[in-house]
Image (cartoon, rainbow, N blue to C red; front, side):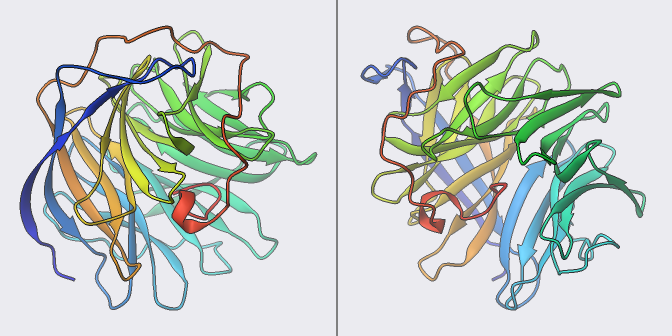
Amino acid sequence: MKPKQIFISILAVLFVFPLMGTFAQQAANSGSIEVITTFDYPGTGNLTLPQKINERGDIVGEYIDSSGVTRGFVRFSDGSFSAPIVDPNDTVGFTEGRGINNSRTVCGDYATSDGNLHGFFLSGGTFTEYDVPGAVFTAVLGINNPADFAGTFIDGSGIQQAFVSVGGTLTLFSVPAAVATLAYDINDSKRLVVGYYIDGSGILHGYYRDANGALHFPIDPTGSVATILFGDNNRNWVVGRYADASGVTHGLFFVPPNNFFTFDFPGSTFTSLNGISSQGNITGRYVDASGIAHGFIARVRGTPPTTPAGPQMKANVSPSKVAPLDQSPSAWGGAMPAR
């Protein structure tokens, strides 16, 4: 499918949710997201899954071809695409592009025949492998402009935790009582790390980690059965997605501590917002009626909500408000780590 230049001003109703399990309240003001263009990685039958966008407008992501092989890519700001990104140690046809900064350093992961993921960085055509020390599984999911990075790992005991590396110092952390914690992005100010965790009932919840290292969770819009936070910017704007009980997945725009609005790509029942630049440019994907995933670029219009609506959810409380999640593509994307 060729890129379509479309300008759709979507009124995104602002939902302001007290994160204490109380009823949502609709604010008088609202925000909007305008779709700028859609795009697909070249080739017949490819599924296109953008992940992050830098301040130059370059987008990193991955595509899945008709035979199920996964390759990374960069869509440059002029609309051209890189050659497929394939880590030289990828032995099974699985390399993901996950993050990109302004110097066009790409981070991501690749799989090996033992079923484990390993992290990498790609800069100037050179791959650098990265594994958390002692880990059997590492995925590098986001990188900022000072080259700090974030991700998730599994150690020899099978415990899945999140990590951030800031100035060369590695910090490991987990949401209390979570069976898995994943960090997806870190902004330049290092005030905000975002991601998701899985609780003991198998439910996905968003969280964020502030400058003091405090974890704030769960981040769940009313009606969510699975929430994922994927990206943040230097204005502390956050994007992600959540699924509802009917199987519809909605794009999510979040401003800490507790302000949300929802975005749905027109005509689609699956919308994911994966990355956001400091200019308010967003990349993500939607799935069409044939089940084909397409990338899009959008921008935030107007002033996002900034007024807290109620008490902020504090750490050490992680209720499961719904039945265990049906682990299906319609619910949350069907991949681990989610993409």
